[in-house]
Length: 366
Image (cartoon, rainbow, N blue to C red):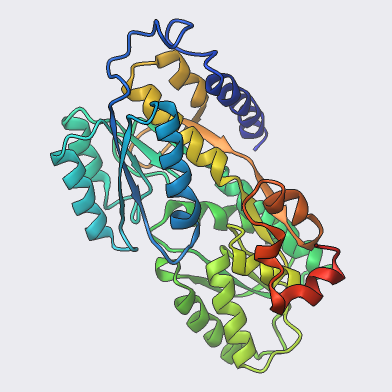
């Protein structure tokens, strides 16, 4: 992981320089002789709505950045697949038929979408994999360091437990069709294996909270509600389903539960002590950098594009894919103000509604 951490730091610096107009094909945005002007069309395909981040953060931030980079002349064609791989394939095909200039793709099923990526490539349309590494001839990839996400979740859970290998936990992993889920799981296992007893483990179809709730109910029935020391949940939506299952089983003193994405409901659960932590990922940095990549690629600004994608990753079908890996932070009750509030993701008033005012006051969040 050390190599990735170093390259992330370099990439972050490069993004800043590129955003200031200091890196481009010939040193000046006016002299770059772009292959395409500012009147470009970007296709953005996001995977689902159950995770609120895509509609609330990724799409509007990406759209705003494209408009900023193109003087308001760039256009984003957006579609959400609603966790349906077949629907996303159709959306991708439509973008190819419409001859958009570039496609930014967050795949529902990384393997199933490979043929569509190939068709885009044949049509001369570059594809940038966003947040999830799709198979096929993609031109670049931007996401977070996914194994590091799992490691951060695993370390946080161990810190919360403070026990030993006899602690029995449940692992609620993400969708088996999402390559990120496998990386989160691998990262978590690298930390948890031998330190706790993994009593039950689930791969949760489509990341759906209701599926996680059903899985958790099964674990409770198998293990007993008082025999679960902690729960590894790969994201916040599933953590919400896990809390529902535990409450339905009559658990009042909830075990530590992890999460990811810093959803508002999860931040509120953290304030209230129902969820131990979430992994906060800077959606503005990811979405804005993806927009910069897309514009640089279409406009032929090779030096800027390379500066934005200094890392290399491998997919099952292609090696050495240019990439940018964005750092992550463990979000707990102690640093809410320094993360999601400081970054403008939420106002304190968004978090500390009437239901949570007492809990907010108890941790000094005001």
